[in-house]
Image (cartoon, rainbow, N blue to C red; front, side, top):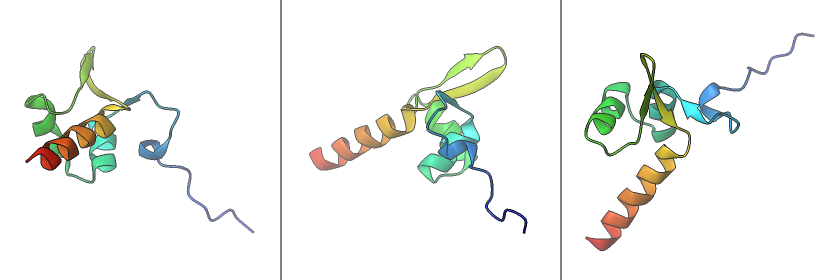
Length: 74
């Protein structure tokens, strides 16, 4: 019988240290355009490698932690 389980999604791979913008957007449960807006405004850390835009794997969690702290302070 064939194996019915799908391969793990790259966005959920804990061994990755850099994510694509699409993978970061999936972790944040936002769209690609929103993720690029967060990057452009500096709210979400990213870096360029050659012509590629990458997001450190810990950046989505750091963004969420800052947002939660801001909302608690408000």
